[in-house]
Image 1 (tube, rainbow, N blue to C red):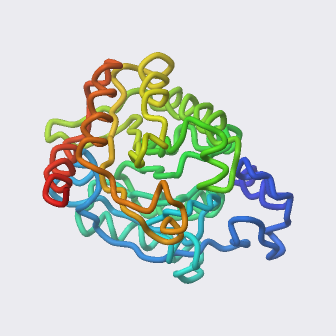
Image 2 (tube, rainbow, N blue to C red; image 1 turned 180 degrees about the horizontal axis):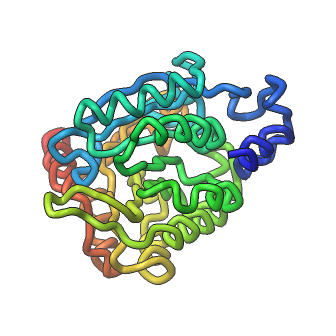
Length: 296
């Protein structure tokens, strides 16, 4: 924890490397100082089937993000700062409450910029008996150096793989090095936890689960993402090919993003995943497909 907190003094916690002293309240691109901000916490039944089970995934939504995605569907949280400051004791209390309510895991949503604060709270929660698996649910723009601090702490990594092209990541998320950085992060995550393991009830207990949001006109670079996962991670990678893209936030100002995904585009993305030997697609796939067919 001390090593993680030290990263905040000249902040290089994430790949942006803003260099501000967050321990003194300075803020960089993530707009977060010494204390974490939380938008909400509670059992979530809309996550991947392998996380939800019967008791739900115990989500804690952190405010702000180190990305600037123009189409973010949670933009009131990630961009507009919806949430409140929490102490490490309060954050630990949220975790313990979620476990008591029967959640199968603690799901940290957008934790990239608050890893030290999470570790600080986990020290408190663990002493109080927290025992369910921990999920690191990020946009995938993570520093390998920071991820190594989580080795042996995080049980399930669930990163996005948003883009395969630097220019696309620059235009839509404000960073040009996303593909290279993202792939290095996913490799480190898989090195730590391996392929996703499920218990006898189909609930995740450890491993890597990747999310890939399909964008209109093939902008997410699905073929390259699937090729990378199959050849450089594992053909047993558990992949959620996500169909729910629709214009939000500033996406209406971008002609290519100003419409919802079509059924044909989603079907093609799933075909590509299968073509590259990725056979563990989340069960949410079929529900998403059915929903898309209704609106197309």
